Length: 88
Image (tube, rainbow, N blue to C red; front, side, top):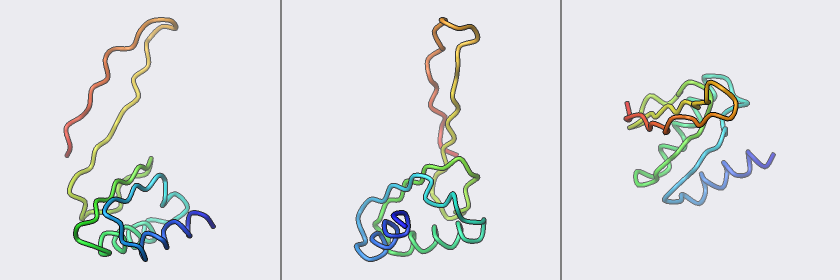
């Protein structure tokens, strides 16, 4: 219910920045696309950052960035420096 309330507030208040953290995890693919489309339409100046482990449903996004966790090969060893991938 808190998730729905937060999404409703975004649609009503039309903020400049929206950060979604697994906001669409309980939805099917069509529901994810509908929600992301509704948020994208609230204001042309609203920036939306969506964090998810699911494939992107929003094809209208200007950028998609995939991050990969790098773990050291042996316990106690240091991991190589993180690489930030270029946006696709």
